[in-house]
Image (cartoon, rainbow, N blue to C red; front, side, top):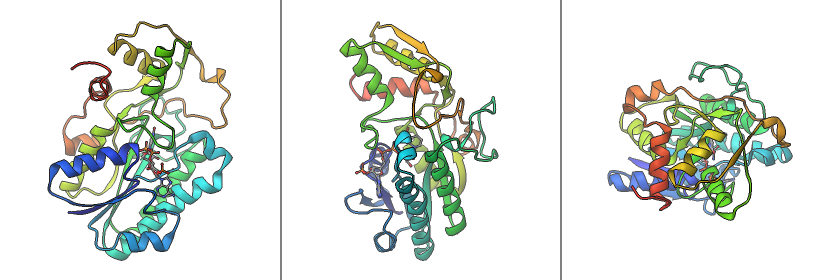
Length: 287
Ligand SMILES: NC(=O)c1ccc[n+]([C@@H]2O[C@H](COP(=O)([O-])OP(=O)(O)OC[C@H]3O[C@@H](n4cnc5c(N)ncnc54)[C@H](OP(=O)(O)O)[C@@H]3O)[C@@H](O)[C@H]2O)c1
């Protein structure tokens, strides 16, 4: 397949490119931000000509900054998605959009399935939910993967790293660590998303899929598990989300049910297993 990866040097883009390169079966077109700005409609149309598949990993991901800069969030996450979808329609390519658990309010009480309606609580989630709609109405062939709380070796460019690295750095620096214990999510390892994505493409899958690791945890449990796995015995203070003053609201529990994906890919590794492999990959612990 001829596959274009937009946002190819991002946290997920990096592992997608690695996965698709290692399989050896695809012709890849790498489109980092320097080469393609998704807010520029004509640039996008020209860039993806001749592709069978376009994977759009580009996003404005800083959730709090999206509240302060809603026009930029809409431009990248919503209009950018539309430009890519329209270009895919024009060139007959499958349009693949990466979305987020933050499309959900987080008050359901059980993990969200693909049949639940988006009910975002912040600008970032609203722009991503709108991006999904743009893809669905403009692209005849589309595949949307909702992922969550992402960790990958490259670290989120937009966030300057990821949660796991931030916790390990804080622990090593001796600074006190306080982590929210009353918000839950489904951690997502980029290597597992990349592998799932390739399986979906090979199977010709289209439609909406949740693609996190199996299970759910609080941010506190995620942090303490990571510290235990690397043998750092430091205290972590559990706090409430209400103790933090942040511009954007967060969903209380937007964890994702991924059974639809598992029917195609087979069992998705639990988040603890994924975290272990990530820590080995980064050299934080031995296998
Ligand atoms: N990180 C998370 O926890 C999380 C959770 C759920 C869903 N997601 C979704 O997962 C996807 C990948 O996120 P990530 O974690 O890999 O974040 P990331 O590392 O920040 O990747 C985003 C990429 O988009 C690029 N980009 C930003 N604005 C652009 C523009 N106008 N045109 C083209 N490229 C642009 C960035 O390039 P520059 O850095 O060079 O600007 C970066 O390479 C996104 O769709 C995000 O919404 C992420």
